[in-house]
Image 1: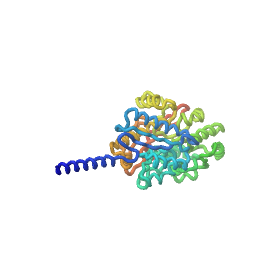
Image 2: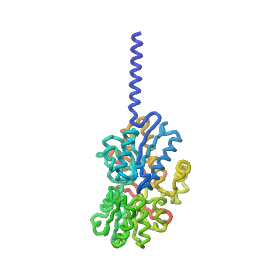
Image 3: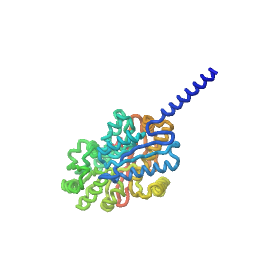
Image 4: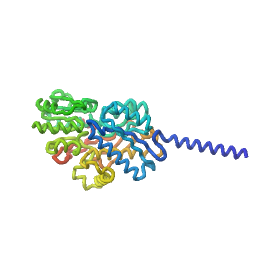
Length: 404
């Protein structure tokens, strides 16, 4: 009888240990049935055009859940409005981390807003994963191991434009308009680095605006008056549309470079006027949904079917709906790779070990790669010119990290 008692006790201990081990595979917000994920997005305020991204991610999460979830677990995606206001972002992120107890924060949008939570997320050791901003600072795994970018970084993108100008218009007189925050300054720093020692001579006007400004009309008038024949437009969607429209209205026709974050046909170019947008140059890494060359493909068909079923009120000409689809697919891949180890540490470990991931709505030749020392997932881009209806790609895929 004593032997049987000891056997039962040992069996119970093993059972407890096994349960503890299983429980140890889950971080806050994860269980056998659920993965809780937090997000902030500007559904209101001056950057509300980006709200389409948050809604697209929710739509893709709905698809995942409808199809059975990730390894049998449904995703609870909690997306809160921060109005593109850093103090509000801090408040909402603390709520998600400390009250909602999410496993990770995914795709919080904006450079100033992510900057406001950068130290907090790393101190708390909560993944700040695939942030919706291309600032260069998101690729510092040695200093900030819990923060990772997703899209090509701003400085590398800006260097692509600088190289094009040096190669094709070496005597250019350049006017720059930039948002007066970390986002705008990061693009400007990369652009000047790309121009090198010629930056001081080539840039004849450098004007900024505040995100709270009603318009940038006065800046566009001043840039025209500077004599600039090249314009680098470093603006978010609302101001990008204003700048494009105002330049056309006053008869200023520079060689016009538009940063990637505002090149959506539906959200920016249509409000600005498609005729007024003709000739713009940008850099792309995703397929433009208005480009007919993709519209007979399986990739576009699957995206359009997803839009029809899960995001029916959204605009199929809006690049942000492609962005949300692609980045949500990337998260899906990471969570699948996590298996049953849904700890915060393993989420980051899997995010930092992506190899040659191809997504259907990325441009051919653009793949996702990461490593423990490389937190820049996407580094391939192609230049494109707007023809009045769609972006027309030209040249080859450029490794943005080696752009200059």
